[in-house]
Image 1 (cartoon, rainbow over the protein chains, first blue to last red):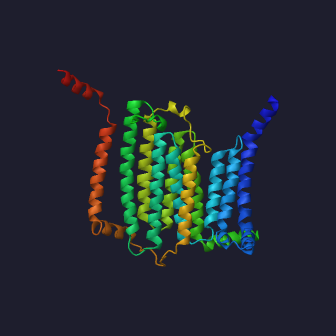
Image 2: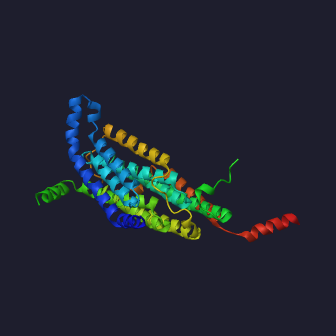
Image 3: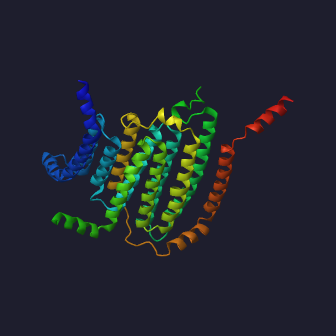
Length: 197
Length: 189
């Protein structure tokens, strides 16, 4: 029994994560081809409103597969999640306009930052996630400046202002983290309950 | 081989899309590593990867000044400050709370995923007024003129904000236990 467990652990450490990541990529690429047939099938069934968003099916399939793969014990979760997110991003935007590609990438980075801001326990990591979100907003502004309003440079000027505010925010935020650390000897978000009433 | 030729033809026809996906393939895993890496100092360095990829995106969006400012301010300045703050706060704490387990905090995950899907659907159902013009070649000159004419007031406010933020940061981060002792001592007297 113990030997079996050890064997399972040894297999998990090397073979399983790589094969799972590979499977996620392959299934994502196959799904892009399959979704064309799926659309015709849905239109035959009369579900036109679902058939007008074929990429969403591929995206949801990739996300579900990645969740399944990440739930397995011993899998390398960071690579599975990153590969699935990139494959989903490609599946969602591969036949869109170029502006929508930029804006979707910015939205994806913004939601990654949002999740990190909500779920991180280290205060410095929370600040890093906020920097990520500000940067995604900058990407939006520069993409608008390039494609919607290329004659004037309004988007780029506002991106410069956001850069300034981000620098100020990083300095003050990290100073606050240092001050809190000096007072409470921790940077754990779960233990910052000084204002609890 | 034919498939490969098709791929290269596609890449030559859509250089910008190809570069966008290449830089996204750098930015997205780096962003996830910032959140999930066990050693937080390494996630601070992955942040440089994200910022570098985004400055590459600025370059292919023909915003040269912003790309270089991004590298100088974010990838060097802010990341340096973050790493120094990591070193000043305690390194022993890493063992207590290593990183986010991706499977926990389902609520935050759901909110972020729903947010992304909503934004994406809103983006693709909108018809954007895309202009076919290029950015002008004297981009830096235009930014400078705009900052000192139309946007002169926000520019000055930004400088005041930076000054106030720097002074506030120094005051907050400065540690002087002696001075407080003196104050309490004088109060006692």
